[in-house]
Length: 156
Image 1 (cartoon, rainbow, N blue to C red):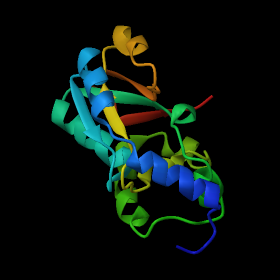
Image 2 (image 1 turned 90 degrees about the vertical axis):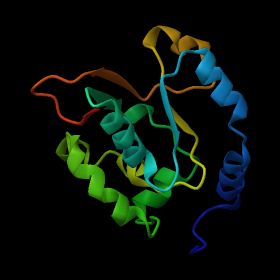
Image 3 (image 1 turned 135 degrees about the horizontal axis):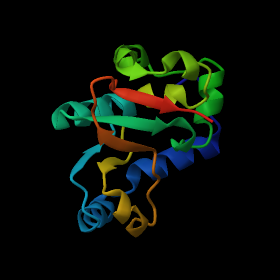
Image 4 (image 1 turned 90 degrees about the horizontal axis):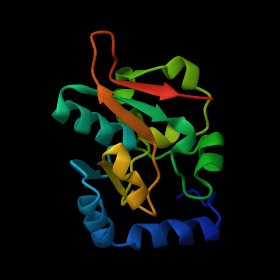
């Protein structure tokens, strides 16, 4: 909206938003996905939080280095650009353990960025992930213990 994005970035973003998710959905079903949502206005963190709430007994170790981003997204965040809905989505940050360690990570803002058509977020059995050629593993789900927090951010 402020003319800071390169034309190639916008072109890539539009192509990504136009990509149908039907085949991906079928591949997730075939791989045994037992939870799935599209990443839209609540951002990755908001949608992941809803999936965790719905399951009730899990926590997620999220690997920030693995979170994919469109070209230019990190660069624009680093320059202070963000959606007008970003502050609303940041309300979910209290659910994430390790925010102090991750505060300077270039992928952290991606968790709270509202998306128009950000792809699918799914829970797939670990031994079936290899069946999903185009998937990116961004974390691991495990049973919630007494000391577990909602989400933990792993960083190298």
